Amino acid sequence: MLLADLVDTSRKVAASSGRLAKIDLLADVLRRADPTEIETAIAFLSGTLRQSKVGVGHSLLQRVASEPPGADATLTVADVDAALRRIESAAGKGSAKAKETALRELFSAATSDEQEFLFRLLTGEVRQGALEGVMIEAVARAAGIDAAIVRRATMLSGDLSVVGKAALTEGAAGLDRYTVHLFRPIQLMLAQTADDVSQAIAQLGRAALEIKLDGARIQVHKSGDDVRVFSRLLNDVTAAVPEVVEAVRRIPVASVILDGEAIALRADGSPLPFQTTMRRFGRKLDVDQIKTQLPLRPFYFDVLYAGGQALIDESYERRSEILGRLVPEAERPARVVTADASEAQAFYDRAIQAGHEGVMAKSLDAPYEAGSRGSAWLKIKAVHTLDLVVLASEWGHGRRKGKLSNLHLGARDPDGGFVMLGKTFKGLTDELLEWQTGKLLELQTERDGHIVRVRPELVVEIAFNGLQASPRYPGGLALRFARVVRYRADKTADQADTIETVRGLYRP
Image (cartoon, rainbow, N blue to C red):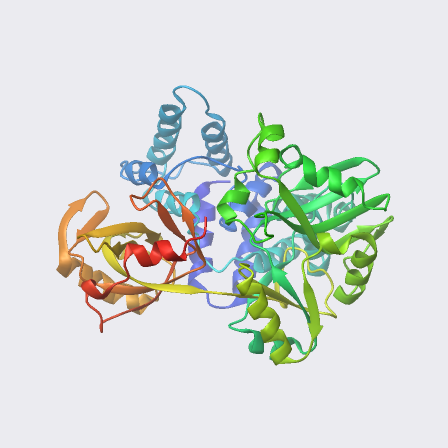
């Protein structure tokens, strides 16, 4: 199948406002895909890659995107997948050059429309309304089977692309093998966001509230002494967390699948920054040494399988009862079950005071909706805001092409100048993008490739979830999950927050 077919479908899906129309378009192109290309086609149309880590930065993509486009659409889906595999596998001395060469060859063979699609695909900006729920229904439509069967198989396999190929080549019978299996990770249940505790209680009624730990999500599988630990992305990270393995072996059950978090704590029990916890992952050669210096504590908040029985269809209340019998209280996050908003707020306040990032509110009746970001789980997090100054902006791509999008943000240095803390393009409406582009062009002082530098006059209110140490920025700190709240026309740059204020919020 030509890449142009996917690009054309993606364009039509993005232009369509109706869910059923999107499903029909996606199903039609999947029916036409060669069996060897189905997995890649599903991934691309979902805005993802089959490769776990291509290792291509934004600046390289900016350079490569300027390649003259090919005149004819000759690239196949298989060609692109093979090129990305070559880029992913490039390692060692000369790998950066090899990646750039392979990427240039790919972009030079692509038409203008294909180049734009590849750029958005590699930057995670394929926004066409083909979220996983829509794609699941498209796979079901193309295969002529019930969407519920595809949805459940996807939840249990963790990979819609693989499930889609089985469905399209083998039919419903090909999905029978996707059940809960030990050592085959299950997609994680995710949460929506509530503005505050009162909203969560009003929505859920009597609910369980748990401390939200800012650690690394883990899914632990155990059969006898055989234990494997999987990350949020369902990668096997067993070797990096030996203390988690040891703790799970002590749980008095022959077989179990647990959902939880691994986190590094201070001596007083308060959490270390997320960035510190993540130092433990990706380490291979010095695990024994670093586990002594930076031990991890596992905390489990759900059980998906125990004693030979799958539990994902049981209510959360029932799963919690089973978890309580299996896992000691010291390895479960603090929780309270209540329908009282005042009691819930007091629990939230204690969690924040103890240094945690917030709480989770969970419906007692809900099954484990693997792979879903449903309303049965709600996260309520403390959100910080700062008034920062826009130092520069970058030209956008895709639907933001021609607009100044990614903002460079700085805090005021009382000794003069501004200290950069990071970038963000989140939270910008189309209307705000339009206004922002015009205003920043009025303030521009110079251009450096795709970056427009501006006079530091615009103050913008930025919401963020925390700070992390960063050698990349001169202040040594970077914002986590930064997004635009609003521009502050009522403030001048000399009224922006200072770098001292920012440092005062950081807890190493």
